[in-house]
Structures are given as structure tokens and as C-alpha cells.
Image (cartoon, rainbow, N blue to C red; front, side):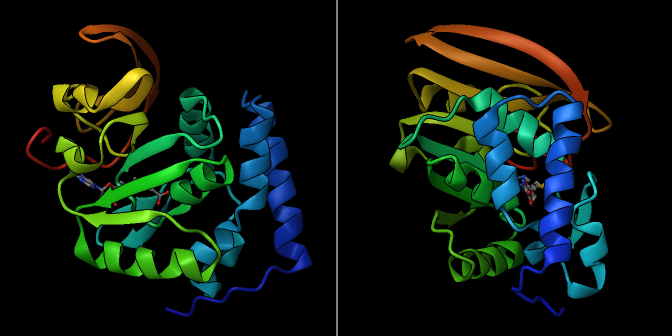
Amino acid sequence: MAYKYIDNYREKGARKKLVEELKKKGIDDENVLQAIGNVKRHYFFDETFWNQAYKDIAFPIGEGQTISQPYTVAYQSQLLHINKGDKVLEIGTGSGYQTCVLLELGAKVYTIERQEKLYNHTRQVLPHIGYNANFFVGDGSIGIAKHAPYDKIIVTAGAPTVPDVLLKQLNIGGILVIPVGDEKSQKMVTVLKVAEHDYEKIVLDTFRFVPLVGDKAW
Ligand code: SAM
């Protein structure tokens, strides 16, 4: 793989167009749009595929996984309502693209990936391109109790149900965003923790994620 970290006028222009496309598709949170406009998505692609980097599509990143579609990243980020300094748990680091968007929004990010190869790659690349998160390897379906509670939790793989253990790791006023369904399609679900044992759940649009694999998942 030949990764290169140069931002040419062509990529800058493509990024602006992507932001316009996401606006047309309904993303209206200015901070999220700005974050998408700042993260150099082509840095997550082999140079041969740079022409794919600013298309609104998911793309293979190895180990049978994908870098999420920009619309999906923007959609989930928007639902999190990130405030600067929020402590965010991300389950499913993958390429780290979503991680960078969260960092651009001012979050302090704890991110966990179950695939060791992806974990090792991403934890090296992100600091190299200027993004610092706390990286963990293991089963994120049970959260990371040691660093809880979190202000926000985002799950970037499709789960069969909302794991209770993740709700327990949220602060009061915290939000969990998780795709829930079967292996073919999931509904985006947000859960607001109103009080201890009191939750408000909203079921939104349909997406297709790779499966969340683990103790509290498939
Ligand atoms: N948002 C990421 C990005 O932009 O590159 C893409 C994430 S990819 C769609 C989902 C990731 O979740 C995969 O890398 C997969 O290995 C990981 N995953 C699946 N089950 C997991 C689990 N139980 N704990 C941690 N990571 C998991």
C-alpha cells in the first residue's frame, strides 16, 4: 500500500464538492460540515484510489472492513451533538476517518477496534496526520468500563440490539448513536440518557453497516 500525505488542489476541490453534496443530502450542522471539509479523506486511501476518496461511498480498507460513507459519518456525527471537550467512546475504529471527524469537532476520543491489524495501522497513522485519540484493541460491544462514563457513545457497526452495558457507561444527559437491525440492514437509533434508568429512544433512517461482532453483539 502506498499512502501519501499530500493535499493537492485537486483533493481540496473534491473535498469542497463533497461538503456541498452532503448539504444537499440533508446534513445541516455547520460544525459537522466544517469537520468533513477539514479531514483529508484521501489520506485513508492508497494513492491509486485517490479518485475514489471524495465520492460519497464506503470503500474497502482490508480485513473485510470498510471506511464508512461520508454521509453516514456526517449523519452519525450530527446526531451526537458534540460539544467541545465531550468525552466520546467510538466502537469500531476502522480506518480512523470517523475518529478524525470527532476530533475536529473538539471531542476527546476513546476508540476501540477488535481487529488487531486495523488497530495497529490506525493508531500509527492518526498521530502522523495530526490527530490524537486514545486507541484500544478488543471487543467494544461491552464498552470500556475502565474509562467510563462518556458524554457520547458512537457505534460504527450494526448491532442486533442496544447493549445495556453501553447505556450504563453513559453520563446523564449523554447520547448513544447505534445502528440496530439484522445483518442486511439497520435503523439508526439514538438513545438519550435522561436519568439513571430513564432513556429516550428514537429510531431513524435505514443504513447498512458491517456487523458488530462480540459478546453483546453477533
Ligand atoms: N467509522 C470507521 C471508518 O470511518 O473507517 C469504519 C468502521 S467499520 C464500518 C466498522 C468497524 O467496527 C470495523 O473496523 C470492525 O472491525 C469494527 N468492529 C466490529 N465489531 C467490533 C467490536 N465488537 N468491537 C470493536 N470494533 C468492532
